[in-house]
Each structure stands twice: as C-alpha cells, then as structure tokens.
Amino acid sequence: MAPVIAVRSRSIGPCIAAAALVMAIVIAPLIVSPSFAQQPGEHTTKAKRAILMDAETGSVLFQLNADELAPPASMSKLMTLAVLFRAMKEGKVKPSDEFVMSEHAWRTGGAPSGTSAMFVPINTKATVSDLIQGIIIQSGNDACIAVAEALGGNEAGFAKMMQEEATKIGLKLSTFANPTGLDDPAQLMTARDLATLGRFLIREYPEHYKIFSQREFPYRKHKFFNRNPLLGSELGVDGLKTGHTATAGYGMVVSAITEGHRLIGVVMGLPDETSRREEARRLLQWGSRSFGSFKLFSADEEIGHARVWGGSTWYVPLVGKGEVTVILPRFPANQKLKAEIVYQGPLKPPIKKGDVVAQLRVTSSSNATSEVPLVAATDVEQGGVWKRGIDSLVFLALRWAKL
Image 1 (cartoon, rainbow, N blue to C red):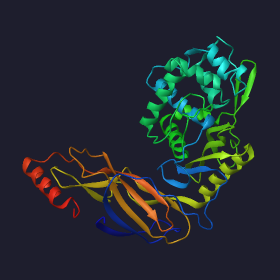
Image 2 (image 1 turned 180 degrees about the vertical axis):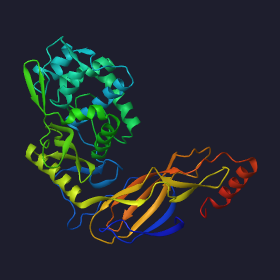
Image 3 (image 1 turned 90 degrees about the vertical axis):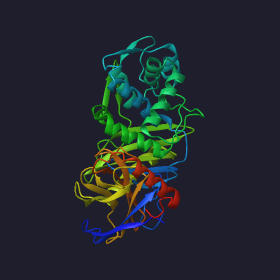
Image 4 (image 1 turned 45 degrees about the horizontal axis):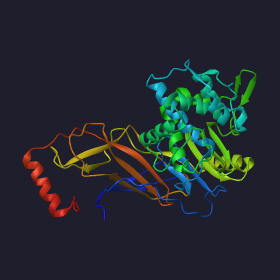
C-alpha cells in the first residue's frame, strides 16, 4: 500500500467544497485512467467507441471501448497531416512547394476512384498549401497520396513515417498502412489515440489548426465545403475531421472551446451521418455541462515530494507547472478527492529544477480522474559514494516499501 504523506483540506469552489486530498506516493508506472461506471445521469452513446478528453490536461472525462482498435477511415488523415506539419516545421517543406499528382495518386484517390477527391488533374502540380486545404476541407484522397509520394516515395514508405510519428506523439496501439484511411486490415486506430492525436495537432501546430475551421476551399473550377457538420454551431466547434467507409461506419474527431476550456471528442462506428453529428454534439454538450476547471494549488506551492536514489538529497520537492488546476465533475457537490503523486522511481540524479518527474492524479468520489504534471522544485545533483551505497543497502533491504 502506498504510504500517506499528507492530508490537506482544500476548498475549490461552490460545486466541490471542503475536499479532502490524500497525498500519496505510488512508485509505479503511470497508468491509463479507469473507465467511468455507467450510472444514472452519466453519459451514454450510440457509438461503438467513444472518448471525451480535456485538451489542456489530457484528462479523460468519458470513455467507451476507447482502446478498441477499429478502421478509422478518413480520421487517420490527421496522422498524414501530422507527418506533413512536422516536415514543414523542420524546414523540409514550404507551403509554396509543389507536389505532382501522379497517375497512381489520380487513379487511386482522384476522379477515377469514386472516393472523396480534390480533383487535381493527372500529372499536374499542386502547392502544399492547396493540398493541406484539400485534405482538411475536402478530405481528398488524391491529395493525401500526392503528399505521401513526395515525402515517403510511395504509400508504403509514408506509412512507415506515419508509424514513426505515432510513436513520437505517444499513440499506443494504432497501426498505419496508407495515408488516406481507405480500408486496409493494417489501418487501425483507437478512439484514445485519435483524441491524443487531435490534442497534439492543436497544441503543436496552432498556425495550421486554424485551417480546420475554414468553411470553404475554392480550387480550380471547384468550391469545396468543410465536411464538419458542427462548425458554426453554438458549441464553439473549430475542428477536426470526419470519416466514413462501409467497414468503419461513420466517425468523427471533434474539438470545441466551451465554458472557457477546450474539449476533444471522438465517436466511432455509427450507422449514418445524422447519428454521427448528434452523438458528437451530445458528447460535447454533456462535457460542457458536467465538468469544470478547479484550482487546487498556487504556482510554486509545494505539493509533495518524490524519492531520489543516489542523490545529494533523498527527496525532491514537487510543484506544478504554474497553478495546478484539474478538470472534475461539477456535481454532486462536496465530493471527496483522493490525490496521488505517481512516478516511476526512485528517480535518479541529476534532476534539474523544472524537469517533469511525476504526475498528480486526482480522483473524485464519482470516479472521475484528472492528471497534472509535476516538476522538480529544486536541482538534485548526484550524491557521493557513501550516499549511493546507503541508498543501495536500503533498496535491497526494504525495496523502498517504507520510503
């Protein structure tokens, strides 16, 4: 059992008052938040897989089969964009660069394919700027393949780049076979990975994210309209991507700023466009009404400490990266909160002030979980031979159980 190191009473607003925080050290890898129990008043959905995530903290507010792999359809184009945006950020590609629409791209994803297309003529060049709009607004498969061939040589080469990018972003289970999301047994994603990917794009590429809210894209003789059915709604939706194939059903990654904070929702496996739109809407509405941000600790306020092996000190004090706020249910009132400092340890020096070394995991009595990164409040240098020797003996004797 994790040792209790402090118990504090903290008032965090009219909805959750006099919350008891049990601060505990858990020497274990960080794990995924548990699923919500379906109780009266909680959210239900017709989607086969779904998740609702707070964009600021990454807290999961709702999930249903969120780690179940399934065909993602055009929602996987978000990964195609992630690879392209990284190439642009690294200076390898400019918006004005031109990529050629090869015969393969034209036949597989263009006019002859009968799928969603940007309709770039065969052997014609299109600017990267236009291709990005063609992918985001029109969901052009031809645009995706043109990007893949330019960056990866072919679709298979680009799929390897997608997989490498997924690892960098932190996607856990998804696998990629093509840049389009057209059905392939190896093209599989989870709702959690899609939400994580959406969150990454929003945070990492704000200059490109604004394109997701663009309503129209005129190209040559065409005028394409954004396929996101919730743009312009009262929910504050400004992204991200819809998807549909016969195998995948209808799905959507959607994001909105509501009640002052951004939510990211994913619904998958729905039977038609109407249910996709309504289930995404209901998910965002429920999250906006049911959750809010609550301040727990001020900036630089010490929250707890973590054990250090072989350091100049045995413990490093922990603080938040600025004010510590969490996303928690607004109701019922007067919920008790359990807080754990979670890290993989003991930590090893050198540790620099400001290094992220732990997570503060806060769980409400209604079983909602929110996580916030904690940083080292001071530097910890490597200790001398004597200090390391004592730590080794303690570790062998007690396995840190009483530390």
